[in-house]
Image (cartoon, rainbow, N blue to C red):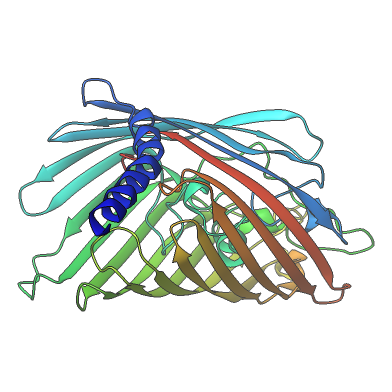
Length: 395
């Protein structure tokens, strides 16, 4: 009887595992184990008590209530021993439902340089903070972080330039890993980056001019300590500085820390918990378009130096391979002369993964937005996520 029960259980597990294995094999796309194509789809729709487009802070946050394509991302990675490359294009629907698209990244990378170095060059999302270099398919929430989009740009800090990374030879316990990165380049403009209108208000400085734009230098130092197979702590500090849209200087500083626990340690599956907090501070020197009078003399009335800060913290609990719950809290200080108000947002979320490989998922997220001087707003979003192709993406 026991033998029969064991046989039935084994057969049941085999039947359940077969679809998952077949699905994984279907998605293992590669050409000669050299090229690794992928395709990610994100659709979102929902309801909001406020103006959806005005509440959106990121370039690809939900901007309309009806269901629309948030992102359709075809990507291609190239991997060899000493050279890697990645490119992806992003199609999306804008606030009116019209289709648009842009090249998000296209870079090459020389790897395995003696001494722990690697060099990246091209168009890339720079290593700043814990989130800037992550695509939409790696987000834990439906929309982008407020502080990142306010201080780095609607799509984060994207550069056309080069970046040098160095895995530091600390000589410490092998459970420690530390990487230093230094980059230089110019930030390309995005067609969908437009300033918001402020009816009835006189705004001395256009907010988009505060972003670093030219001769941008970035630096990041990250350290990770894997305490044991089950617990790890990662911390980093970042800086970006350069010439802004006013022709003056902008500097952005960031500190981030993350704690992670995995029930099965280094093995796949099981419960997991991740808690990340990031603080950003920005200093901006600004002029307005009215700086010069007819004699070419700068009117200092329209010049100013402004600083602002913001913080976000979020926790993700993985209950099993098919279900996550998350909670995010974010705050931003305001700059009146940029027409930017103080803002507070709370976002609980639930994500259900249809497959154990977490390639097809449904996410629901509630946003409570409190913006200084305006009514509180509430939004409810439903997102569909589909990932096809290889997970072997070059970053």
